[in-house]
Image (cartoon, rainbow, N blue to C red):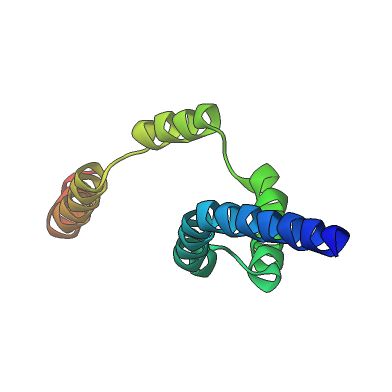
Length: 114
């Protein structure tokens, strides 16, 4: 009978130890559950990661076709050297004026020239 009492005493001590351990773990478990409940919805799914990889691959394939900053600067310099709208309108006006003058004074010059 003494052996049974000793076994029951050890069992009671073990149960008390387990209860104390669970009491210490319960707040941590609750905290971890709250953290996972908040963070988990913000994480990407495998499908979303696959879409990101596809987009990244497409962007990476496009990169070699884009102009560098140096190339952009060269294009801007070349554009600056091209005639502007004001210049082109001025030249068109001059040509129209010359044509009008030729139309007016052409017959007069033909009569006066031998």
